[in-house]
Image (cartoon, rainbow, N blue to C red):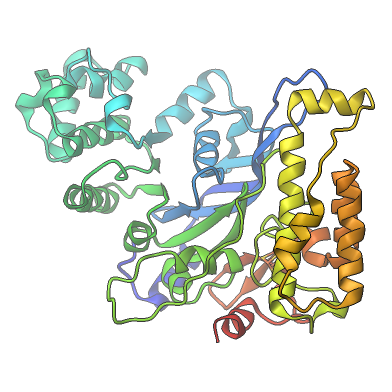
Length: 444
Ligand code: SF4
């Protein structure tokens, strides 16, 4: 947890051993479609490490793949590709006794204490269940272990024979934590462990997690959407978007000066506790693309406010450029809607779905703006394709004319600063302006 200074934290990370190594991990869900398979790319090639005793936060909007990533690390979902090494052993291929041992070493605490506890079992039975499943020592020793765990998480011995419904939300989460600790794991995945709790109870559970980490040397992956909680509890943070890690690095540094455009936008959405402090809010255009059809280049390219422009358009009026991006988004949405089964069938048998209203869309978007004639010609050309039912050609035309490296090439994770921070963005390449510098010009 973030109790050490910046320098101490850096030195500690350099000297600590790696517990978990994730390399190019992918988790895809096949849709079982009859026509052609188009998998959901829930986790689309993520790589990171966690050192022993560290808390890594995993944040992102709902649907970004963070819970699927946690479940894949737990082997509750099967990885499609890539490696996950715990203490040097790839766990994606474990089976039999090795898998059983792995399930000792890694545990998970779930978001909703209500649905993760069996209402028909007593608290003692719930906490003891993993010990029974793993045939841990003698029955007497198991009962003693449960009593010890009750005390460890701040419950009382007499709670052993009570049922989950007799407890508050915070107490039920304590039961979930006691159960996760039963087999003395070294790594715990906390999937939104305080999201369902009142703020005052959240603080108590977070303190408990912190105390347990110090006492037992635990390593945490802390999945959350509440950035304030993550800032409080995590040493490092990984920011996910559309199945990718956009930025990963020390929590203090990332919250103070986000490097990646997506992190920048995400952090700007945190309410500022002091109303007198002005904060530059960045409102993102549109919604994330479907994980079935992610962008070919940067995952964030369809919404990025500081996307790199092609050279011939660097001086184009910002409002016109923004509307071009919105027009591209409109076409993507039409394409997405078109992917219904009936429309796909119509397309496959050569009957086009007639779409109309492109002229209205252009007028709506560009009316009142001073659009250079050559730019308008390109927009009309694309609109004609769409008008004739060929959204793909319209999108391709606009990508060809207005697209940049952000649309066509997936960025590498590039180093930022000297504390191991990595960010997935072409703008960290020295031939472009850094994202932070471009954001500054946008909010002026
Ligand atoms: S690579 Fe381009 S689209 Fe992606 S975050 Fe960087 S500037 Fe934005």
